[in-house]
Length: 316
Image (cartoon, rainbow, N blue to C red; front, side, top):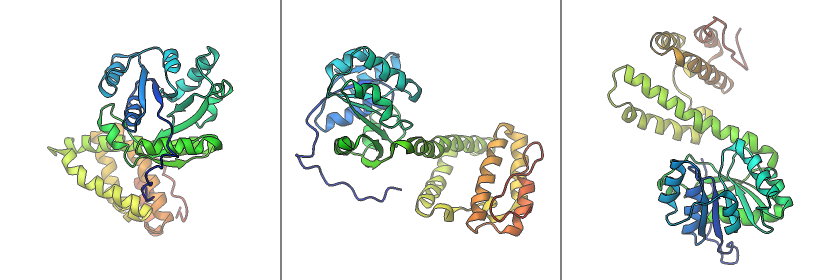
């Protein structure tokens, strides 16, 4: 949970000059960030997008902004947002630099969580100013994304001389800059994916099981429970652990596994993996009593009958 106090409004001397903004890759992220920059006084002038969905997003969030080629985006804009999938980013940067599309003094911003500023080195050699600004937020591709940027943390990586400019742009979009070292970007991104992406899978599977159990409104049932669990976890970390694994209720866990094997066998492996991780953390933090761990290991045996691993203080 972000406990940092909100940033003070930028002094005019600290604000980036009003810039023309371009977007290469009109996925869910780029148009939203450009729209946020527009609210701060910058001017979107060009966007590139290939699919019909990309063009629709651009038309919705950036009306009247022309859709052009990536090279034309760079020709028109002083600040360019490279909002393409992670695996496509290195090739895109190299291609733009090799074809002379990059201009000296141009701010080139990518939004990949995985990469820092070094992926922009080909553009740096062409005279561009490289910034990595990754919003720690999930995007829908709609106008609600712009609102969600308020208070959103951004993972910021840039050369030291561009740090203030990078942080100022984040603040102008309504976000909170969090400095991430170049070498820490992959770990930082893994942490976010572990939490946000896997959360969607867990919630979707939980709703599916509730529907199988006859619950008519799984989302309404889960909303308060998961909201409270998330809030408790953000406030208290492992101390917020509850449930049969943390209590060592091996019989209940065994019943869960049996029901999953009967009704949703595709979910068994995920349940076992998360239960083992939960047990490891509960034991390490003194929530799971060591004398209860042995029976829990049996309940958490995988499909081949091998026991799961309980870490510190294991009783095997």
